[in-house]
Length: 96
Image (tube, rainbow, N blue to C red; front, side):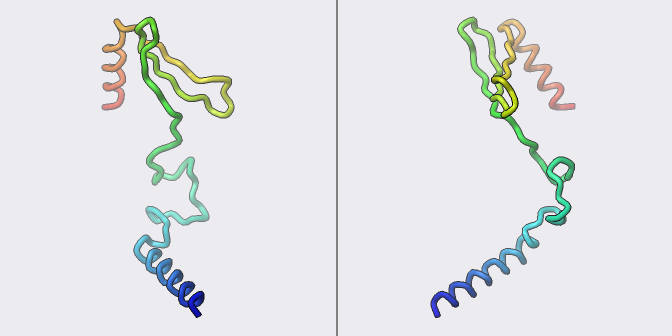
Protein backbone atom coordinates (compact mmCIF):
# COMPACT_ATOMS: atom_id res chain seq x y z
CA UNK A 1 0.00 0.00 0.00
CA UNK A 2 2.82 2.43 0.89
CA UNK A 3 4.52 1.70 -2.43
CA UNK A 4 1.33 2.52 -4.34
CA UNK A 5 0.90 5.80 -2.46
CA UNK A 6 4.53 6.71 -3.16
CA UNK A 7 4.05 6.00 -6.88
CA UNK A 8 0.91 8.15 -7.01
CA UNK A 9 2.68 11.00 -5.21
CA UNK A 10 5.59 10.77 -7.63
CA UNK A 11 3.25 10.88 -10.62
CA UNK A 12 1.42 13.87 -9.16
CA UNK A 13 4.71 15.73 -8.65
CA UNK A 14 5.83 14.97 -12.21
CA UNK A 15 2.50 16.15 -13.64
CA UNK A 16 2.68 19.35 -11.58
CA UNK A 17 6.24 19.99 -12.77
CA UNK A 18 5.21 19.47 -16.40
CA UNK A 19 2.34 21.91 -15.97
CA UNK A 20 4.67 24.56 -14.51
CA UNK A 21 7.58 23.96 -16.89
CA UNK A 22 5.59 23.34 -20.05
CA UNK A 23 6.49 19.66 -20.38
CA UNK A 24 10.15 20.51 -19.84
CA UNK A 25 10.57 21.92 -23.35
CA UNK A 26 12.27 25.28 -23.50
CA UNK A 27 11.08 28.05 -25.80
CA UNK A 28 8.45 25.90 -27.49
CA UNK A 29 10.94 23.52 -29.11
CA UNK A 30 9.69 19.98 -29.41
CA UNK A 31 11.98 17.26 -28.14
CA UNK A 32 11.97 15.40 -31.45
CA UNK A 33 13.24 18.20 -33.69
CA UNK A 34 15.61 19.97 -31.31
CA UNK A 35 19.04 20.52 -32.86
CA UNK A 36 21.85 21.71 -30.57
CA UNK A 37 23.81 23.03 -33.55
CA UNK A 38 21.13 25.21 -35.13
CA UNK A 39 18.41 25.97 -32.55
CA UNK A 40 18.23 29.66 -31.62
CA UNK A 41 17.37 28.83 -28.01
CA UNK A 42 20.93 27.59 -27.37
CA UNK A 43 22.65 30.41 -25.49
CA UNK A 44 26.13 28.96 -24.94
CA UNK A 45 27.85 26.57 -27.31
CA UNK A 46 30.49 24.26 -25.94
CA UNK A 47 33.49 26.10 -24.54
CA UNK A 48 36.92 24.70 -23.84
CA UNK A 49 38.43 25.45 -20.46
CA UNK A 50 40.57 28.56 -20.77
CA UNK A 51 43.37 29.76 -18.49
CA UNK A 52 45.36 33.00 -18.37
CA UNK A 53 48.70 33.33 -16.57
CA UNK A 54 52.23 34.67 -16.97
CA UNK A 55 55.23 32.61 -17.96
CA UNK A 56 58.73 33.14 -16.58
CA UNK A 57 59.42 35.74 -19.33
CA UNK A 58 56.48 37.89 -18.16
CA UNK A 59 54.36 37.11 -21.19
CA UNK A 60 50.60 36.78 -20.79
CA UNK A 61 49.69 33.23 -21.75
CA UNK A 62 46.18 32.31 -22.83
CA UNK A 63 45.83 28.56 -22.84
CA UNK A 64 42.91 26.39 -23.92
CA UNK A 65 42.48 22.78 -22.96
CA UNK A 66 42.97 20.31 -25.78
CA UNK A 67 39.93 18.73 -27.37
CA UNK A 68 39.69 14.98 -27.73
CA UNK A 69 41.10 15.25 -31.27
CA UNK A 70 43.96 17.67 -30.53
CA UNK A 71 47.53 16.68 -29.83
CA UNK A 72 47.88 19.21 -27.02
CA UNK A 73 46.64 22.46 -25.50
CA UNK A 74 46.52 25.64 -27.59
CA UNK A 75 48.61 28.62 -26.46
CA UNK A 76 48.60 32.34 -27.28
CA UNK A 77 51.60 34.39 -26.09
CA UNK A 78 51.15 38.14 -25.61
CA UNK A 79 54.24 40.19 -24.81
CA UNK A 80 53.87 42.71 -21.95
CA UNK A 81 54.19 45.72 -24.29
CA UNK A 82 51.23 44.47 -26.37
CA UNK A 83 48.83 43.43 -23.59
CA UNK A 84 46.83 46.67 -23.43
CA UNK A 85 46.40 46.83 -27.22
CA UNK A 86 45.37 43.18 -27.27
CA UNK A 87 42.78 43.58 -24.49
CA UNK A 88 41.41 46.81 -25.96
CA UNK A 89 41.03 45.05 -29.32
CA UNK A 90 39.16 42.18 -27.62
CA UNK A 91 36.87 44.61 -25.80
CA UNK A 92 36.16 46.51 -29.04
CA UNK A 93 35.17 43.31 -30.84
CA UNK A 94 33.01 42.20 -27.93
CA UNK A 95 31.06 45.46 -28.14
CA UNK A 96 30.47 45.15 -31.92
